[in-house]
Amino acid sequence: MARPSLTIDTAAIEHNARVITRLCAAHGMTVVGVTKATCGHPEVARAMLRGGVAAIGESRLENIRRLRAAGIGAPMVLLRVPTLSQAEAVVSAAALSLDSELTVLAALSEAAVRRHRVHEVILMVELGDLREGILPDDLIPFTAAALQLPGIRVTGLGTNLACLGGVAPDRENMARLAALARAVETTFDLRLRWVSGANSSALELIAAGGMPAAVNHARMGESILLGRETVHRRPWPGTRQDAFLLEAEVIELKDKPSAPRGTRGEDAFGHRPEFADRGTVRRALLNLGREDADLEGLTPLDPRLTVVGGTSDYLVVEADGAPLHVGDRLGFTPNYSALLAAMTSAYVAKRTRIGAHS
Ligand SMILES: *Cc1c(COP(=O)(O)O)cnc(C)c1O
Image 1 (cartoon, rainbow, N blue to C red):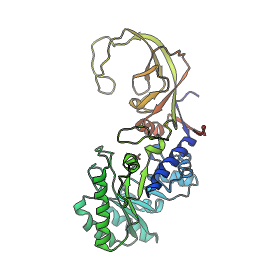
Image 2: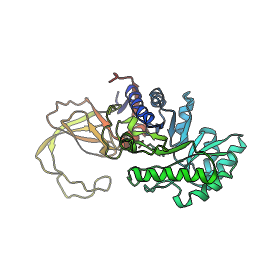
Image 3: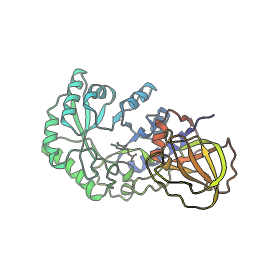
C-alpha cells in the first residue's frame, strides 16, 4: 500500500469508552461519545456505543448524516452551535443541539414546527474559556425568550472549557454552572434534564469527587479516542493510548549534514526554524506531509526516531541507529490535532482492525 494509512483499533476505543462511562456513571453522569476527530467514523461510533456511551456527539451535520447512513440509530447531539442557514437541516438530523444565539433558536423553532417535531436544546453558558456561550448575566432573559419558542424544549444548561482559552474545569466554575442551572429551574419553575459540564478536561475533577452532584452530563472525545485527560494531556489510568496508528513509507534514506547550508530565509511555511549542527546524521524522508497530518503531533513508535520537520508532502525523520530501509513503513502515534488532520485528509487510507483486548 503506497499511501499513508491510519489504522483504527476499535477494541481499544470500546475499552476506553467503557472505562470513561463507568467512571462517569459512578459519579452520576451520562456520557455522550464525541466522534468529531474521526469525521463521524461509523466503526468508531459503534465501538463507543458498545463501550457504553448513551449518544454520539458530532460537530458537523455531514458527520451525523454519515453515521445515520451507516445505520447507527443512537441519539445524535450537534455540538457546534448551529449556523442560522442550516436550521432546517439541524432539526432533521439531530434531536438535540447546543445553542447560544436567540436568532438561531428562532429559526430552529420555525423548522421544528414545520416538521411537527420538538427540538431539544442545551443552552451553552460562557464560564471563562471564551469560546461559545451566553454570558451568565444574560442567561435568565435569554432563557425567558427561548421558553417562548414553540417546537423548542430547553432540556439543559451546558458549558465548554479547556478548548480555546485552556481554562480547566474546577470546583468553582462547576459550582457556578450548577447554581445557574438552579436559578433557571427556580425562575421558570422547570426541571432541566441535563447539566452538561464536562469534556475530557474534567476527568481529574470527576475522579476526585469534585464535580457538583447537579452536573450529570459529559461530552467525551479525546479521553475515549486517545486515552488522555486534556488539562495536562496525561494518559488516563486504565485506558489505552494506542487506538490509532499512522504509517508512512521511507522514500529516501541518506547520511546528510544536520544543519542547512547557505543564506537562510523563511521555510515553505513562513517560519525560520533553528537547526543545531550535530555533524552528519542518518535522515529518512517519508511520504507524509502537511496535506496528511499535523506533523508536530506525531510520536514515532520507535524511540530511536526523531521528527525533524516536514513540508506539504514530506516528513523528515532522523534515525539514530534504527536499521531502516527504503520502502519500510514507519509507525507514529498521532495526538488529537494530527488525528483530526489525518482523518480529514483524503490522502490517508483509513482502516479498522480489532486488536487484542488489554
Ligand atoms: C469537541 C467537543 C467536546 C469533546 O471534547 P474532548 O476534550 O475531546 O472530550 C465536548 N463538547 C463540545 C462542545 C465539543 O465541541
